[in-house]
Length: 193
Image (cartoon, rainbow, N blue to C red; front, side, top):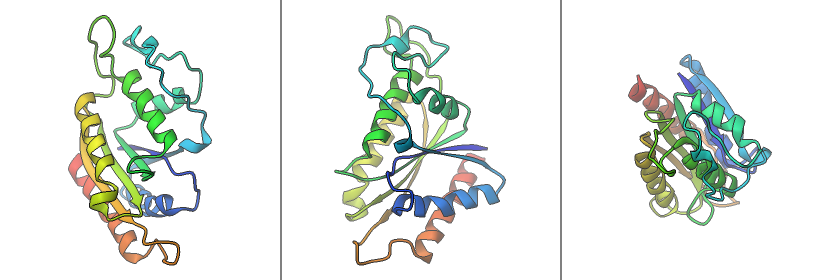
């Protein structure tokens, strides 16, 4: 199986990557292919709902000529999409939101003169998130948004790994969080078989 991880963190050594790394290691140890895309390293313009993407049902198609085209290809060529993001103001980071909007329109040919197909229908989706609040009040809104996103796009939502940061005086990553990340990878592998 091929996993595409869209990394929404701006920090290359932050909490979100520290929990994503053992997750990726477990996936690879079980023979899966993993691609990690750092969204903050990419040029991603915001969707303008111009509907250029709706003109051709066979391609992504967009007025913006930016880095979302190769991201689209990676997502389309994967079996599983992982949205990995810290939670800022109860939702994902700005580049994650921008790429999600662009994928929503570009992958779903629902918004033109006639309703077309979902190019990514049937793909599996999961979330890895980190936040400073209690998980039921920190990551819950993003998870609900992803559930609706998946339902609308005919994607299969497989769950979320969320971990809390207790603050700057505490070490975020520990053996228990690493164990959670590896177990989450194992659970996904079993669900998707």
